[in-house]
Image (cartoon, rainbow, N blue to C red; front, side, top):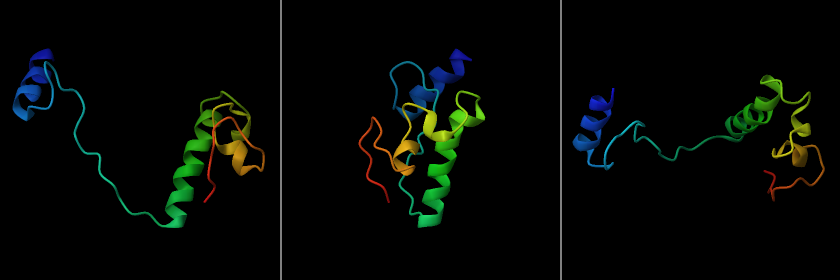
Length: 78
């Protein structure tokens, strides 16, 4: 596997020794509905993984801000 990662690093010139991740970060335009779907997905991850019972119970989530309480992280609601 290291040979493949090393080859990819040399081929792309974007890594020193090994390249594991694809280069595909790019901005995309989303509608308001798409954005809320992504936000809800992220808020529900701790619930789906059994860490908390409700999204706004997870300490490091912006879900608490969407519930009307100021959380630990500064959030501008859309």
